[in-house]
Length: 304
Image 1 (cartoon, helix red, strand yellow):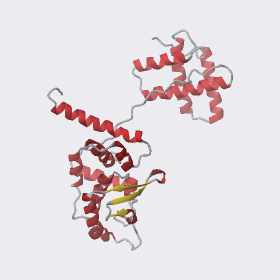
Image 2: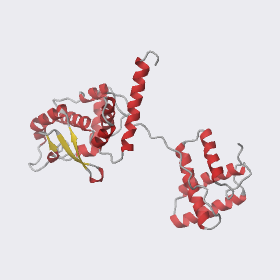
Image 3: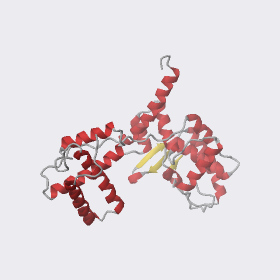
Image 4: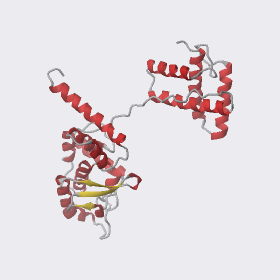
């Protein structure tokens, strides 16, 4: 559908009136106001091309415009932003009694696809775990951190801030205080318990910590490690392991969840282990697992 370069004069006046009002009320930046103007101009031009104006555009016209955007393969994120702008615009007109009904009511924003978390294959994890040089106390510490991270699915912050009092090796669990100060108990597994026991006995004392310091994984200066430092260490070990994938700070947490699901773990169990308050947050990992299952199906099924 052909569109005019600029909206009609009457629509431009309405847009100017709205932008002046929200600039006065909210003190928005020039960039934000320019973005609002682009979205409003775009919709007004689309309406003008149909012989309609912003005051005429009802719910049906808006829904048809959203469908048109889908046909044009416009990004859901830009459509969602435009709809948010239109909501503000029409609510302003309603407040000023310029219109009697808000056409954006009961019009849902397009669902934005959630990006799949980047993860590692099980062999990638093995290669990463074996990359540190155990003769070096710093590398040995890194190996244990990687083992604990993959065994427990801790957030990176939870790992670097871990204290001795949070670990119970007799019961094989870590007591974690996660987001929102929510406490959870996370099992470690025999392999991580073995590495932790050896590390706490033979390696951690080499960092020269004061007797009352409970930091489990100190930096080489004997202080609590930062997330950035540990992330630098992970990237270094990944390079040595020949892993050329783009990694994220939560890569082993993602691998922990994905591999559990691939091996048949219940989604709600994974939710509890990760400390997610909402199951929908955990469900993103089912898509990763399904992708893996589809890949295996294509590879091994005679009609895959």
